[in-house]
Structures are given as C-alpha cells and as structure tokens.
Image (tube, rainbow, N blue to C red):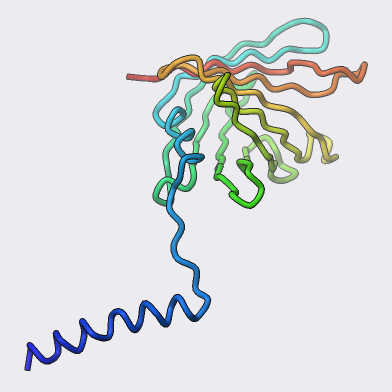
Length: 184
C-alpha cells in the first residue's frame, strides 16, 4: 500500500508542476547579478555623519547601521540609529532590483519624517562602484522634496554616502555626508 501511495505521489508531482506553469503562476524569482551589489552593504556599520548647514557650519554626529539581505537575496533591509543634534533618529529602509526598469527601488522611513515615507530609484555604475539614487518624499514642512544620494564603495569595509539637494540659489548643496566603517 505504501508503495502504491508513493508511486501515485511521484506521478502526480509533474502534473501539478505542469498545471502551475500552465495556470499562469510565475516561477519564483531568484537573486541575480544585479542583487550581488547588495553584498557590499551587508553587515554592521559605524556611521560618521556630517550635516552641512547653509551658513557654512557643520554638525557632526555618529550612529550605527545594520544591513541584511532579505527574501533570499532579492532585497536588502537596513536599520539606522544616530543622533541628529539632540534628537535620536531611528530609520528603516528597504531596497530591491526591479528588472523591468533596470533600476533599484528603495523606501525609507524614520521617526523624524512625520509626513510619510521617501521613495527612490537608483542606478549602479560598475566602473566607479557607485550607486546614484534620486529620492522624493515629504520634507519637514510636509511639501514634496527631492534629493540625490551618491554612495561610493571605497573598500569591503568602507563606503560613503553624500546627500545633495537644491540650495536657496537653486544649485546642488551637499547637505549631508555619511561615512560607513564596518564593525568587526
């Protein structure tokens, strides 16, 4: 009897697989070459932050970030914690590769952005090991704002991110720089 049940199960398995394929169910996706870039950012990081003010002064602080692969390597999630002046900042982000657009898509939310979540699209340059992302989201006043983040992988244990937005003169202003050093 067990042998008969095993034989029936083995014969039914290909039929079920064919039905799933014929029924329009897509095969599960797997991480590909574009997802490999996430690996440079995975780990625990010490973060040195410089916030440039329009008057030329700079505020410096430190923080930490933990980044991990999720969904079988299809995405990367990151948790950020730092001080922004006297306030503790907690942030959470997620990035993934969108094959149909040939771009990375990301979302960011933190406890200082009370007006919602930011969304971005990024491209990767293999030659310079640089990720360039344009993010949009609500500013402190609730109005939509845009910024460009350029992240350069310096080595396996260091990368830098520069956040630029338009200054009062309409030119790009490097409002923040973050230096990530791997914690070993």
